[in-house]
Image 1 (cartoon, rainbow, N blue to C red):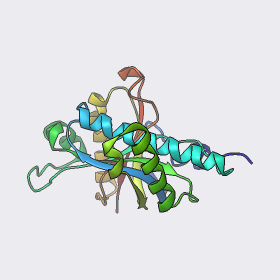
Image 2 (cartoon, rainbow, N blue to C red; image 1 turned 90 degrees about the vertical axis):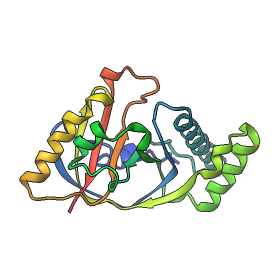
Image 3 (cartoon, one colour; image 1 turned 120 degrees about the vertical axis):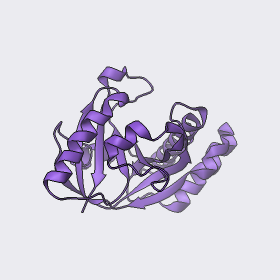
Image 4 (cartoon, rainbow, N blue to C red; image 1 turned 135 degrees about the vertical axis):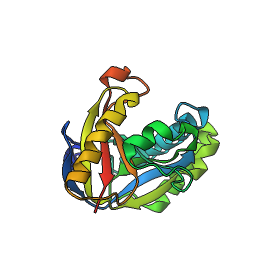
Length: 207
């Protein structure tokens, strides 16, 4: 049996163009972990390690039962306390809100056949084998964003405000407003890719 590759099965989900466009995103389930703080810090790296370790343990456990799958791209939801930082747009937020104040939910999309029990068993296996304390915070998470505006950002994360300004202008022209938190899909592995070669989908739920 051919193993599911969600990046191919849901190409519309993992594809965007350099200019803003409206898309409708279906419900899906994800492996997830939440946290707060600078993404260049140690805790963020530990959370990524816990998430990937659980994802690959799920994969290999599934392979043993003839339910193998390809581990999908890393994603992140990002938000902050808007009462403390009353900024006007995502572009402004990316420049004015300190990195230490951002909260996040890291995600890896999973096939529909993965269950909560599967995740719990994989967490236990990772904890016993690798003693990764943060694996206990990994969970199964369901999300349906619906209508969104997105674009493909090419280059370093520091240059994202330019792309976010395009999204803000697109929203204003069409009288759309935000309807959720900022979403990034990391098409490149930012741990191994040079900043100028990064490709990231920036997505904003709207109404």
